[in-house]
Amino acid sequence: MSKCQRHVVIPLLLTCLLSGCYKWSAQTTRATVAGPPEHARLTLDDGRVVELRSLEIRGDSVAGFAKEESSRTGQPVWGDTLQTYALADVTVFEVRQKDKGRTRLLVAGVAIIAFFGGLTIWIASDPCIVFCKVEE
Image (tube, rainbow, N blue to C red; front, side, top):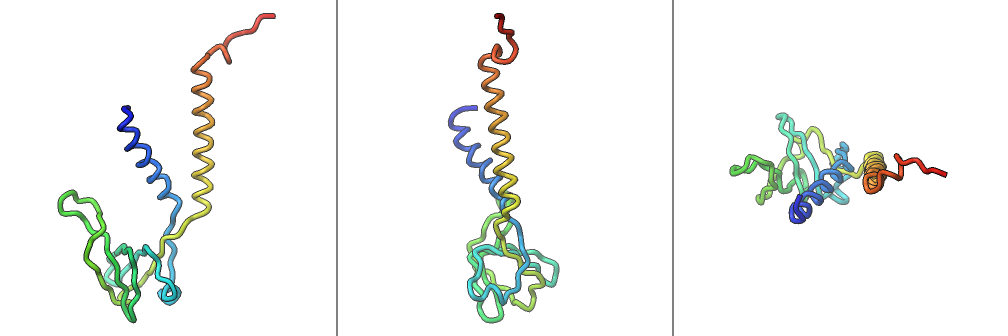
């Protein structure tokens, strides 16, 4: 792996790992009026699930920029048009929150992998550390 590839792969892996530190938690819209979340997921009464960012709750509606499927790549991307949905049409309102349990597991897992990876490199650098008998 070249140095340039490592500069791309390592941040990508960290991003994937850190996304595991979050979970969706159902909320009431009344609880978010004081301070709307930055990121939310709405389940509408017609069964559609919409992910929004830069949320604003305006009276009886919620507005934000929705994640849409790219016409070019087919991958989900954030749209640049403000979408508005009536609160009456929202059956489930979920907020993305940090998950302490998953974060602790991630940190422990990375520490264990780093320990055994370091141990493997140390042993591979000088096999006599483990496999050679010392004669007295």
